[in-house]
Length: 361
Image 1 (cartoon, helix red, strand yellow):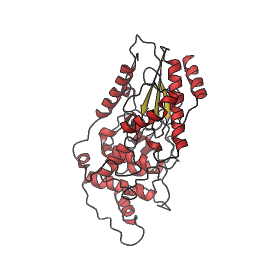
Image 2 (cartoon, rainbow, N blue to C red):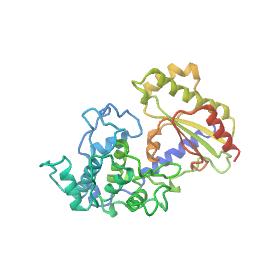
Image 3 (cartoon, rainbow, N blue to C red):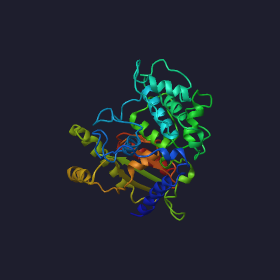
Image 4 (tube, rainbow, N blue to C red):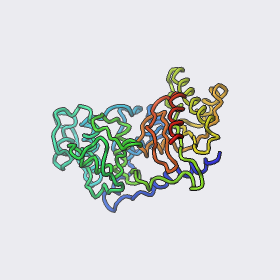
């Protein structure tokens, strides 16, 4: 296909830039080392290739998070205020080389963590109920105080966040983590959703970025590589992220819906593949080669898939802070989002309307 190599080059450049972010500062950040061994498939609810797998793996290896049991991580579970304090305390202790005894000695299980967090400035306020789910703002505020500002070097220029005004009670901490690349927000608008609860899968990626600067996300124009060269006319790139692995153990109709969704995307691809202004590619996420083969064997005759597929979907989704499958992103020729992200199963009619509107720009 005419520009697949350039599209692939764009994402390879993206991945390279992520690995080139500032490394650990001399001293305390180097204290974050692997202390636990993570085996593929260790948690039955963390599939290979799913967007949050690398965050879960690193958070577990660094002893910043554990599973809810030996075999389950509960990626969709909500983080409580107590659990946020525990993560922040662990970050603080490892960074500062502190050996702290957090054994329970009466009271709530988290009391020793809360007492420690108050003593070192991690907690700047008390909470009425530490068993309540933490909001994204509360979680960020607690974690931001776990490390000194020198360990959260700014790599992004972020002057405004759509839903976090400068008067927000946690604005200072949220903006600090945005600028440090620990938080990234929505790919299209940087929206943070401060009042929403935070899931364990999201928390795993965030604490990993706190500890490992090379995992932080640079959200400036330097992150964007031109998909086409100036002589090309392409100004729309449609990226479809999908996966059949997330439907393992689900009823057949769920798998059928995913197959039909990809069939719709493929139909759009076939309809516009002759148009020199648009490029359409897909990224299968969370599937092994064997799972993909079985999927195509089962549905290939029905839908006649022909859309090009590229590797690297989970890493791209994680780097942009996207936590939904399936989803579709429309970018311009310079890699900038030009339409709202479509999360969930799309219809042909919806995709057709968006593509035609973009082509009329």
